[in-house]
Amino acid sequence: MHRSVFLLLALCALVVTGCVGYRTQLVRMDASAAALPAAPVGPLTFEDAVQLLVARHPELKATRAAALAVNTRPGPSPLVGSTQVLDGTLTETMLRTDVLSLLGMGPRQAETALARAVRDERVRRHHERTRDLVADLAEAFAVEGVLSELPTPAAELDIKPFEDAGLASKSLIAAARSVRAEGDAEAEVIAARLAEARRRVAHLVGAAPGAGVLPQGVDESWPKLPAGDADRRRLLLARGDLQHLLAAWRVADRRYRYQVARQNPNLIIGLGGNLDMSLPMQLIQLELPLDAPAAARAAEHGRSVAFHELEAGVLGALHDAASTRFDVDAAEARLRAATERRKAAAILLTARRAHVETDPAGLESLVLVAGRVVDAARQYREAAVAAARARVRAARAAGWPTPKIVGGGV
Image 1 (cartoon, helix red, strand yellow):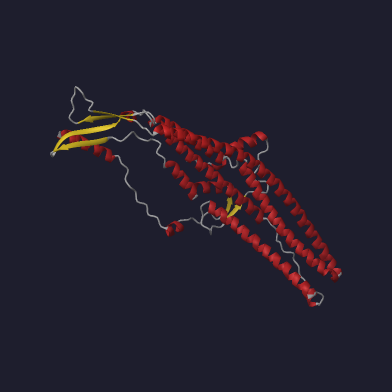
Image 2 (spheres, rainbow, N blue to C red):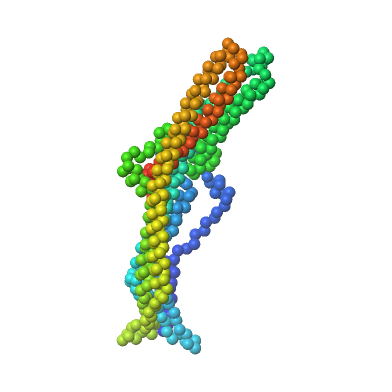
């Protein structure tokens, strides 16, 4: 009897030695903020920025950890040990478990398949989020490229000589000051928007807000939009959100299979410490999971939900790609018009300035045209930024960036 108890305790000690210990992690807000790197500083290409984003962005670190947080090797049912004590005397020692689970039979295989599907779904979620963040990075690069190349919006209007000569009325002087104020304000808006685009890039590559990032290497034709119908459809159906929805359907399918397999009875076998070698089986139990059929029916409906969500995702993606193409056409049309208006305003200002040199009576017309120059500069800036955003969003809706560009496997 004492030997049986000793064997039971030895088995428990062996199991405990394989357990994972708790590892302390100290977290402080100020320490997390101080750990943010200031690098990179200076010129930064899009390709290098993508590598930094994938490696350093905290959200992607979290999605990678979430994929690793899935136990893809669920073990068998617990091994239960028990002893019976009668009047202070140990009468029997018993070990029992589900023998089908121990042999890898029953619902255990389906449970393992479900766990692997859950992990794959989280990997797909990581890839989807990576591609979303890289697309956000591309939009920040495109906007920064537009803003950094904008000319000064000032109209270079100087009417002080006319004011000193008494040839400018108070209302005309006020109008000229307004034009200068609008030009200065537009210059400040451009500087602020440019600084914000660079701050956005620093955020996405995991750097502190003060990092002196200078994006480079993109132009107004970047990123390229897929040309042929076959390429467009292939890239579209490889979108990260659609791959994630497909993985979610696989999870629902594996969960359904697991619930179907769980309908089978569990066979519990126990071995006692007071063994009778002529009859070694001391305990046999049969467990009937009465809730399993209802759970299997619910899981089947859950799979239908995932399937229809995938259908909705594909339909939405097709329309999203078409819609963003129309947005690009509209944005580029507005940009062409704004470009011509800015050119015309500059030419007209030159003509009015030359006219005023010979006829001071044309000063009022000069001030009005200078106001149109500043207004045209503002409209061009808005149209150019909108066109850059529309192009990136159209490429994004069409399936860009591709997994090859993003990388970052788990």
